[in-house]
Image 1 (cartoon, rainbow, N blue to C red):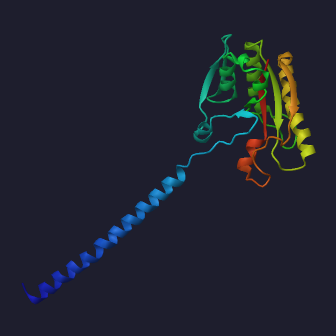
Image 2 (image 1 turned 60 degrees about the vertical axis):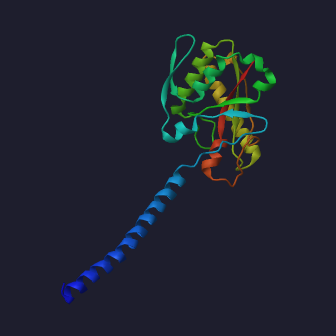
Image 3 (image 1 turned 45 degrees about the vertical axis):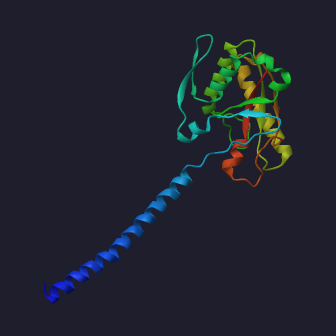
Length: 222
């Protein structure tokens, strides 16, 4: 081999020695980026609880991935268009049990949250899009004529508490009035507003948290 060929071979080897560790470093960085993104996307949501009252929520996973439409079949043969894990699904399942054995005190602490009920901002006016769920609740009460419910309204911790109590009560009463109009008023034994009494999040919490404190709920009563 000539002196020129030896120099060319040596230069090529030196270049390869330089490229190998560089390629390995790039691969390691790419792997780290992939793992970090995976960890950030895989966090589990933690459900908050109250000491004295349990609110049965819509399936969080269904809300994130797109709620799954189902047919909820009632004892009288009527089928409701609803969502898996929604208030209709869970309320009907509960009414099918021997819930009377729980007793009045336990029932007072168990609430089912509406998940497709909205009001015009700052008012007790139910939006037209919410009528479907009102009709579903009325259909459920008709299918379980011996069941009674109470309506509860709740707000987050922002604003004046006197105003919050008034607004939450107004919204609960608006739902009761809508159910009265649907022909099941005798089974709705009351409607009350609790303002922010049971709010889980402080007024400084982000909107994505506080929205869970603004709700209207149903409690089954004897």
